[in-house]
Length: 57
Image (cartoon, rainbow, N blue to C red; front, side):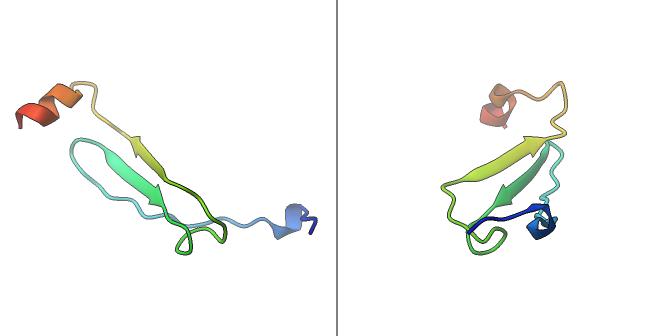
């Protein structure tokens, strides 16, 4: 089945707020109508935060 640009749509994705950075994830059947393995985005991570800080805390 061929699709064209009029078949596209915006998808609202969850955003989990955290002082260490924000997390957004995508799940099959919940957010997209096709199978995916795993997708997540970490963003707005403060410059002073490193994975070592996470291990110590």
